[in-house]
Image (cartoon, rainbow, N blue to C red):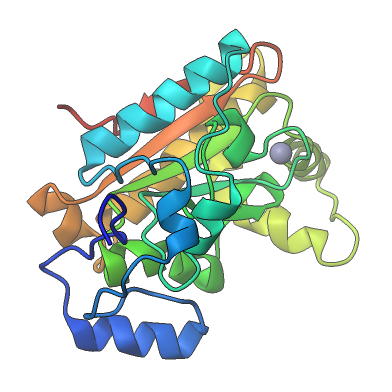
Length: 251
Ligand SMILES: [Zn+2]
């Protein structure tokens, strides 16, 4: 069978780690053998090539965002052939950590297809050990070359946390855990005396989060080798545009 290739696993990865991680998570990861493409998959539209470097992954995402802004969506790799192609293995080229906000779905605003992205969404895109572990899953087990920490305009979670901390109050229930996770961003925001503190806090928070990921002991070696970039970015609800704040890889 020719014309369709299963996603290729990056050669430097240790098979043992991949296998272990797959067992832990139950996620389908790539195997050492390359299954033959099925007739149905071969008959589908030619799948796009997976970006294999931080720069190509970043460029792919930003191209998709440009299409979203322009209203020129391609909806790539969303057909039954693609579903069949990635049914046994996955090889996403990006990890997106974004907010639960219903207006910020990464697959839409980057115009991506099935199997392209690992997506994590929490209120105000806050992290904790479980979320950070999930962010690390792709880069550590299958060489995912890009992480984007994406904040957004008028984030309700960050606005609520900012107001609660300003007033010295707690948020109800487990929402307080989100507010607690945002305290470092709040402190820096207060110091900045920005005229629009909530918007400043949104930007400060994604920059802090991406810096922490970039320098953590497991991801830092990948960043140092140029195999991984961690980008902080801000999404405009008004225009649909993703503005890169820090960490953009170069070609
Ligand atoms: Zn939000």
